[in-house]
Length: 341
Image 1 (cartoon, rainbow, N blue to C red):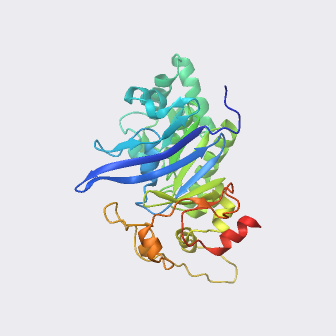
Image 2 (cartoon, helix red, strand yellow):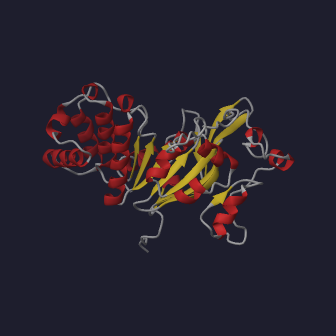
Image 3 (cartoon, rainbow, N blue to C red):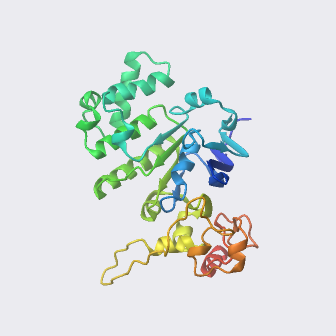
């Protein structure tokens, strides 16, 4: 049976990524489940060290280092069971059905090959095109990401381009084979504000036009609010809250989400709003507290929080199907009120 438009393009259940340690294997990503639908942009947000980039890489079958291990209860890309792929199978899928934009384009691009060589290599690996067809596909893709002079862009080497242009090249390489899913890992890092807005608008427009589902990884809630349809907040390798962007931004139920929101600078005419940081820092995998991982930084934590891991559940127990969910023993009351409004 063919999938319907409502079916998820990517569906992952209980994703785990583990690394070896002195105390056995430690989970840097611990039980993450997510779904992505065609044309949807899902934001994955959290502080550095929360496991966001590891999660994104795991969706492409890339474990952190030679000792990293990826497992899941289920991991499907359309009709394809990703959990059953070997490395050869993953090489066929990466770049064709699921692609990734990395954080730093200058290190992601090979400095000794021209943009044209690198873009054509992606096309030839995944599409049965001759040289002329591949060049046409490369030219069309560069034009779609904003290169007016695509012939010059094909001849350029990465160091000859600005940061924004290099990022556009990475977007082109990720989208040239029209993937079903795009993982964008901090795609605007180190770019100026104007270029950031251009790249984010480009990703949003490409998702809407091509129907590609996007997982946007970021630490910036303002970016999530600007272009994401839904958002997931990650802390210590687990999802602490998820829901529609507007609901999550304006009615956070988890204290960690509320803390991230309070730490976001805002401009208010005639007012000065102080930015309030979250005390402490993200613990490493070996230092995570028992129970709720946020309990050692949360002013609402009690003995229950310090002893029992909270599970994701609806903000309103009477409405378990509500899309806004949190993993907190003592959620903020206004989130529950908003779910029933």
